[in-house]
Amino acid sequence: MIDYETLRIVWWLLIGILLAGFAVMDGFDLGIAALIRVLARDDGERRALLETIEPTWEGNQVWLILGAGAVFAAWPLLYAAAFSGFYFAMMLVLFALILRPVGFSFRNKVADPRWRNIWDWLLTVSGLVPTLIFGIAIGNLFLGVPFSFDDSMRMTYNGGLVGLLRPFPLLVGLVSLSMLLMHGCAWTAVKSEDPIASRAERMMGWLSWLFVGLYVTAGICLAVAIDAYSITSRVMGDTPSNPLLKLVAVGSNWLADGALGGWACGIACVAILMALAAPVLARRKRHRTAFLASSIMVISTLFSAGFALFPFLMPSSLDPRSSLTIWDASSSKYTLGLMLVAVVIFMPLVIAYTTWVYRVLRGRINLQHVRDTHSLY
Image (cartoon, rainbow, N blue to C red; front, side):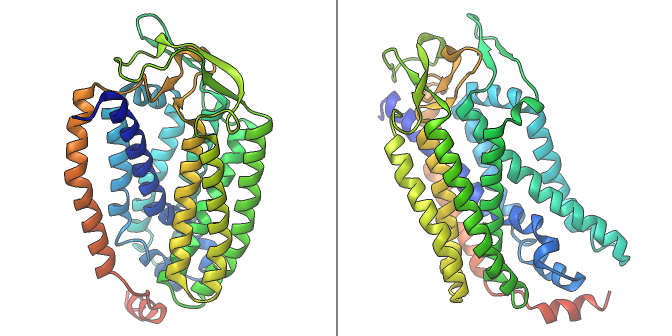
């Protein structure tokens, strides 16, 4: 039987994998929705662009459901603190995610160009809002979230949506936005034909440099301007969860002093290299390899943030002692063990089914076929 401390580390990695799966699989959906008016210039092109994601976007959101469910079951204190602290931000994300399928369904119900123009703008919003807010949420983790626990483990949150919009989180939000827009272009290049694919290739080049510039700037800010949290008491990785049993100091460096700060820097270098390589590969018409590079960029970016934060899951700016770490925010050993068995059984099935779906739906969307087909309606 795996010991409690190891189970917590395993589940920290699994949550990262699930969130990375969502970022990769649903990230290009969000990026394409946000760029629908940029990559496609007329109604036929926009129909073709939407058809690159319409058959699979619902399946891609399984990763979000798995991630949220895993946080609820494996890290209940984190789930409670996050969904309370980021409540209004998450409501905006939820409304945007609901708006996307509505837009897919209603856009083509009426042939009026004004009707379709409105839904194209709403689809753009449905892609931009979640992409930006996810990054803002991660940025706020490094600064600390204004929550605390009393001796009875009752949580207090002292903040709101506007309080999340601080300079550094906004910078991280722009990193997230540029990253997923580029990822959307990479998928567009795989699934579309010219002229849409050519536009995506060119835009990937611009977005890659934008992402690298913003990402490096965020890293410099994190290294020189953001105070880090560190545990100053003995770490007890095999005891029942209680965040108030530790001592936390503020004032160290996330990258230089963090337990996995060196790993975070190494992974960040991988993200930068993949971001620069992807558009080069796309221009050489190696679109699938470019998409793979873009996916590695997304995964590396997310893991660089997670490794920099380790062992913290959600630091507290109100009471550093209340900060949630992987050692004091998890479910019981039995729960983590039972869920791990379920993951071992069901995650390969999810991956196998997803692989089969994408294999069946492989190939490019033919723009002329889309124009001819929809001209009948």
